[in-house]
Image (cartoon, rainbow, N blue to C red; front, side):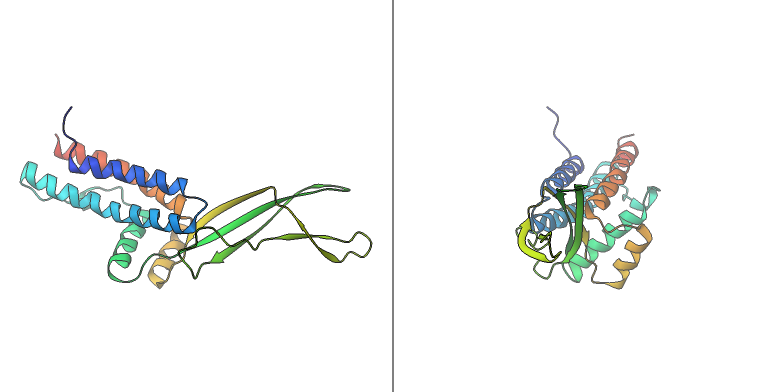
Length: 200
């Protein structure tokens, strides 16, 4: 079996990190750690390319020759720089809970809210989005909690720098799973471009 190059190894690590991020959906602490690792690996990929390209061809690898960079990949570059030189990445959790309502008209409704997490090490999101039954005679809320029948989470970047906030406004989403998937689509093209350039 041929030896895997460092570039291909880092790229495989990137794909695994994205899968781990997707699987960590119920724990803010794990989501933040997986996302931070993914961000770090995006830089390590280019570093491995520089070393390998110089060793194979004697020429410096120029990442700027790849023309597929996007606002999302520029965001990841900013995130790497911030985490390495400024402050750690912070995330928020947007939670939606679903409730089945019985009685006349019945149906299903949803409530949602975004938790701006001051504690970035929470093992699970706060358990505070609740719905209570009402007295049919008075219409007043009771202490009888209506159990939710489903819950979903979206994890959002919680920018602490104006530059990151401005870039997120241009991109149009702070959903870190969507951002990571978009970044990976570009990095797949970048990896193929590198291989075709260096192995030709």
